[in-house]
Amino acid sequence: MGTLRDPKPKLRVRLPNKTVAEGQLLFFNVHYDIALFEITADFTFQLPSFGSSPNYGQEVFVLARDKKSFLTVTHGRITWFEKPDIYGRNYRMFLSCGLRQGGDGGSVIDHDGNVVGMSFHGHPKPPIIAVSTVLTCIEMWMKFSRIARPIHGLHLRTIEMMDLSSREIMYRDYNITGGYIVDRVKHDSTAERLGIRCGDMIISFDKLGGHTLPKFEDLLLSLGWEFLRRSFDSSTVIYFKLEVYDLLNHSRRSITLPIGFCDADASKCM
Image (cartoon, rainbow, N blue to C red):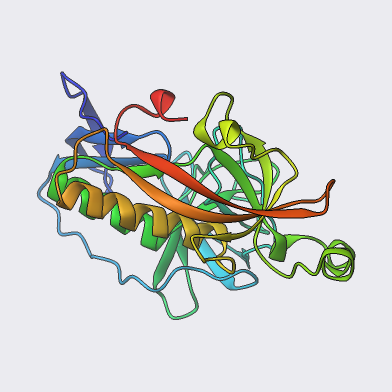
C-alpha cells in the first residue's frame, strides 16, 4: 500500500485564498484513505498544531469545506462505537455529529485548537482517523517511500466497547474483562489454519489486551516502521502470542501466530 502511481496524476487544487494551483499526487493509501499531494503556490500556509489522538467521549470541532469552498464547523463527540468495514479497517472512530451538507471531511480539532484527527464523509456516522496514524503514515512515506503494516487476517472488536449487560455476562460467565472479539477471519489465512474462528475471544494479543483498536493500529504501524527501517524482505514474519478463548467449548488455548508484512496494493493485503 502507498505505492507511487506512474505516471503521477496532475491535479488542480483550490486554495483558501480562492486561487487554483497545480498539484501532483505523491501517494494514495487505500487502507487508510490517506492521500499526499505536492503543490506549488505563491501562498503562505499556516501550519496547524497537532495534539494527541482523540479519546472516546471527547468533545471536538470538525472543520470541512462546502461545495463553494467555504469553511464550516460542527461540534460533537467521539462516540463509543465501533464498526469495522468489510476491508478490516478496525482503526476508525466515529463522530456523533454529521458533516455540513456538501462537506467531504476535514480536520478534527480539540478544545485547545489542536488537530487530533481527520474526518471523512460516511453514513450513518462520519468516521475519523487519529492524527497519530495520519502522521505516522506521512512520516513513513517521507522516509521510506512506502507504508508497511503487519497483516493478521482478523477483523476485531474490543470487549471494552460492548454494551454493559454483555460485558457483565463476559465477566460473570467467563471471567473475561478485556481483549478482542473476532468478527471475521480471512479465508485460508494463517489465523484460520491455526483454528481461530469467528466468535472467539482474544484475551491478549502479544500480552496486550487493553488497547483500543486505534491504538492497536498504531502498534501495527510501529512494527511496520521497524520492518522498513531494518530493510527486511517481503518474506519476513513476526510472531504474536495469542491467548484465545472459545466461548462454545469454554476452553482457552495459546496460539503463536506468524504475521507477514504488506506494503503493496491494499487488494493484495486484505
